[in-house]
Image (cartoon, rainbow, N blue to C red):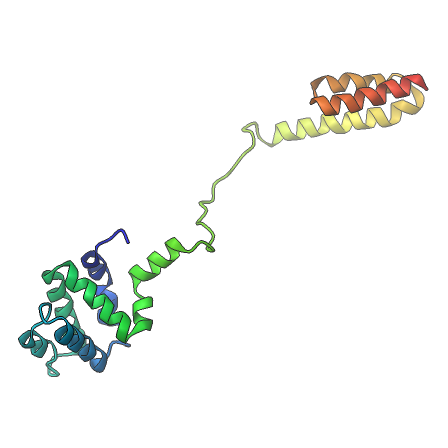
Length: 180
């Protein structure tokens, strides 16, 4: 978790203030959790202030989040713990949790930046020229073997620029046709 809880709470504040699942009852549960279990984080006087029903819930929640950020890292961590305990679906839909989950998910495919990958930078005309040459050599070999005996020798000459295994096969074929 690279970010501190205070930084995460700052990032999640807008989401939390506007989430309809955090109604008055849930916000009261969070305040009571922080007040009863961690009185050093939220005193009775502060809890009474944040539980005032005359103030809209989103405003109370915003003030609570600002207050917790002012209290420090432990207060923010305990808020996340209380949120996880009371409203698990909101906790797992927080922007920082979604980002964290997506970055740690080994089954998710990595985001691939689409780029043009070229095997060479010579362009399509070079490819067409090479393809035409190969097709020409194939036609020459196919039609010349029946009429001209030098067709297999041309095949043997073509083997000069190939890898070792391909050279052996072509030279073997050339030698076999010369024997016939």
